[in-house]
Length: 213
Image (cartoon, rainbow, N blue to C red; front, side):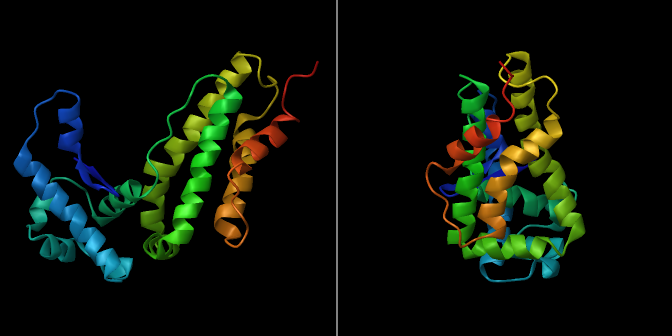
């Protein structure tokens, strides 16, 4: 059982099920909310990620360790769920064309970059993640890789629809579309992130990948 922390508060897995008409358990929702909010409090208090243990999370949330382990296998999974909730929600693709879908996906990266620049909390947490391989591996597997699969699926549909050349390496194409935005948003934090940047990147890359007439 996992939950996401959004700017408007905690959204637990049980609440997500209720929204689909499945009966949930309010007590379980409250416990999960307390755990996730406890982790956010530790982040906000400036406690280094390496110093946050399941025991410390349990004390902060006012629950037992067993309660946490019934929901997560370890602190890395808890961190990832909290971070996923603090980021932009998954993009809703228009489905009108490969180009339009790519612009939405690259735009999400731009907004994430803006959030990172404006949030000292996110910037600090992600900076620490680089020195914690186990946490980074969990984050990559459960957050980054699913996002990459979405882009590859869009590109694959583009090939099927004739919007992209059939000989294009989809893995490389993925990197060509998202890489420029990642460089500007993450590696060059002083560079501007203009409102039309996602569309300009996608259109520029597509110039070399469209089917030849």
